[in-house]
Image (cartoon, rainbow, N blue to C red; front, side, top):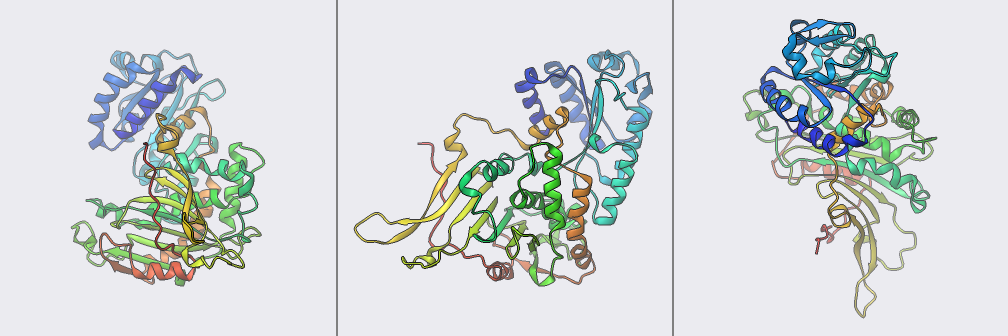
Length: 469
């Protein structure tokens, strides 16, 4: 429900700016969700936007409820024509059909084959057919490549949108602007000045009844291999030739191909106490609910700089941020290095913000120093501005045909090549998950790994989001 609510809001705001006269967005859902969507779509959404939604109950819908027409397939009967008048009245080849597959990846090939056989629009005219697929897109390199091959036989790459909602977040989309539109970042963003980079995702709740599903994947497949790795690409990539989607994605692929194999001694896995109390989780499960992984990028810009990717459930806080920690100032005449290093922090969620931690003089008569910040907090700076939800942006991009914020096939392959060997060792029990208490920071070994990577903790400083007063 939340996905369509977000999309409805986006359409109501921006419908006038879209040069689209007909879009059919078919949400392919599990049967248990469909009644709620059917009511919502037919009575509200379709009457308030020019976009037509078709709630389908899985792959059988296409053969059981559709018939072949000159342009593809249509719902059967006059009732269907009354429900979807815009779609059914389109000139031949003019309708625009977007299929969002909110389904298990195991049925993607079957569903895509039915779409190809029965619901394709003629692309040689102004219409199009596009397919959005969600993660997890495979469980390792082999399964991902198999899925890519099966779908690639049916659709061209410009028709396939592999969605990662992190690429639709406001602060993630700000990364390219921050890096390449500000002169003072350009000389800092390299191995000469950066000591380490952290990309962190924390949740303060556990699997919450999803243990059986989560146990099939674990935190690396669920968060690190996709969300955090995509953020790493934007932090580490070189400046693209232009802002065209292919130029940006070319640079992201180069970063992924430069990542060296992961060493077991630079990995800490954890599993929170009580995870296996879920009856759907096996008693002998080694599935990590926490992981801290150090990646190294073998290129001129980042040689020797560790990138720490960390994600976990049932931790003491909920946040996602990027921390670029700079090296110590040479010749520290103020003797203030023990207070902490300069950091550029990008808070992705909650309380979106960009702030720089720096050392300043403490107000008063004495020459003493303290840690402070230069702060851009979105809630304060952009009062009254509604920041769009990630899915709003990405669905709009699919309608516009902009693939900049979607994962290309070779990009997906390169990402799986990085993590598949480690995941197989975890699946085989060669790398064990350490227990940690819910509400903690995770296993103590993760902090030791962080210190080993060179990260220096700031003591006595806490960033407090500014108030609106």
